[in-house]
Image (tube, rainbow, N blue to C red):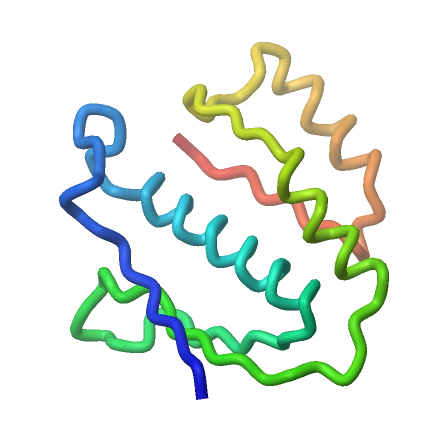
Length: 121
């Protein structure tokens, strides 16, 4: 009957670099994804209910767990990869050669498997 509640802590948002709190929420999402991957590696399936309380937008997710019957090697490999992942904290912006890169990127993937959405400024 274990459950987990995930909240963003507004007091920990660095307002000079993340005035909207967007990056803090993205960071919480990354932590939640790592939790789901790690729990699967040790035999627990995770059910995530996003934004479970519409009256509290700081309450990002509720998660509960059920045991798995089997844990495959791929799940353990994915969890082990978490330790070697890195992040790039530079601002997001289009590459200088974006007009020529965008068509190349779109033609490099199977459109039935990958969706590319370009967001405006």
